[in-house]
Image (spheres, rainbow over the protein chains, first blue to last red):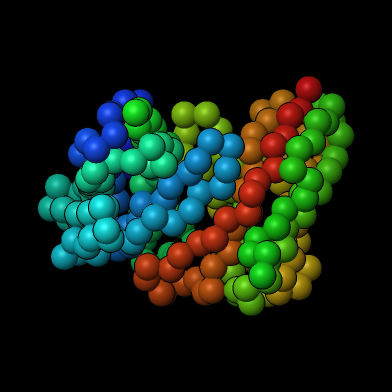
Length: 111
Length: 116
């Protein structure tokens, strides 16, 4: 079983749609959680950190469920520019050099 | 402020050849990392350097060596390339490592390596 699992998609949604991704992780000791965005043939870039209480950044909302060991990302009012692969990243705080990446969920927003 | 830079951007090697991938950061970060990304898999850590003068193995270190030349530069060497090392290689850096939570890593643009 992979340590961090994501639905690879692709998710194809129209502009303006709301889309949600989930990510599950296996290490119950994990302490830090992130969503990164990766455009085609580009490097990953931090989209947002995920805090225990959940957090929002504009159209993006991240949630953490420790009991069920998953994190989620909700994108509201999708834009064409949101088309990318979204990577779930989980880190054991006691070993900050051990970030585990999911394989990513691919999103395509269409006109 | 260039962030994290990598050279070369593309490389084709024959099996058994050697090469060094270069990485530099200008953010005064202490920690640097080398990852590989393969289709259908998440990024996997090859080696990391928590601070200048130290290096440690990550998840998939076999076939690679690293050198933390100074605080800015962290190179990855393939001594005898194999087709299984065909991948996209990303270098990353972060301010610190160890016990700090929510530490962001910044990635370079990647090196696409094909081993024939």
